[in-house]
Amino acid sequence: MGFSDKIAIVTGGSRGIGRAITLSLAKEGATVVLSYKSNIQAAEETVNLSKEFSGRVLAKQWDIGRFQETQDVIADVEKELGKVDILINNAGITSDNLFMRMKEEEWDKVIETNLKGAFNCCRAVIRGMVKRRFGRIINISSIVAESGNPGQANYCASKAGVIGLTRSLALELASRQITVNAVTPGFVATDMTDALTEEQKKLLISKIPMGRVADPNEIASLVTYLASEGASYISGQTIGVNGALFT
Ligand code: NAP
Image (cartoon, rainbow, N blue to C red; front, top):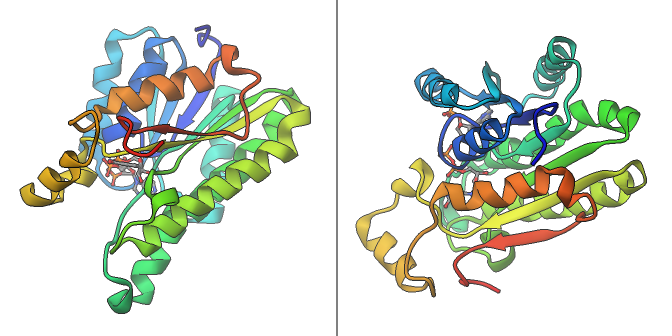
């Protein structure tokens, strides 16, 4: 897909969906900087897994929820690698609780990582993309941004915010040939969903028309396409990958 001259940042690229995206872009020849927050082992494992591919993967530890830290790290990446062509805002967390019991910290930390983290990373890469008249930004939202989910008011609000951010940025950046899209996965087999009980998983799967959860690669393949030159006229879209669960 012509990624050999492309530099990508994948936040939360060390595990789960982010790892699948990182490896898919590396397979296509991109240089990928994956970010992680604390699990260095997972990050190193992803770097090792990428070694069989033509692209190069570097791991950087930082907290995307912190504005200045994010500006500084991404400025260093631009200095080191020359530019950033592709930003995948993938890192995300949950901190579930029924709304009546939701603590201020539970609200704040989810919004800070999932929504402000995307803002922080976009702010850091956009100036360079505008200058070069090229950019691909893909924000990983969630099916629950549109459906809502009991016990996840903070998470759903953050993911709905990401869709609003996507649409506004797409409009602001369209004249510079920068595309901005959101992907809304359904239920994907990762550490995030592994935290659910077997009973909760069974119930969720029973509602999915395809009768199974997604493999992270099934999200990565769409993200890789949206990041490619071929997707140059797709912008401002929110695209579901959900086994026909919510269409
Ligand atoms: P995951 O397996 O839990 O991995 C999360 C990744 O994000 C890890 O690399 C983690 O780093 C990183 N991260 C978390 N907080 C961070 C921070 N403050 N700064 C930098 N990195 C941070 O997650 P996943 O299931 O692959 O989900 C990926 C994205 O898809 C998330 O945005 C999630 O909301 C969304 N999504 C997931 C599903 C699903 O069913 N799994 C469905 C819809 C949407 P460490 O390892 O260092 O903590």
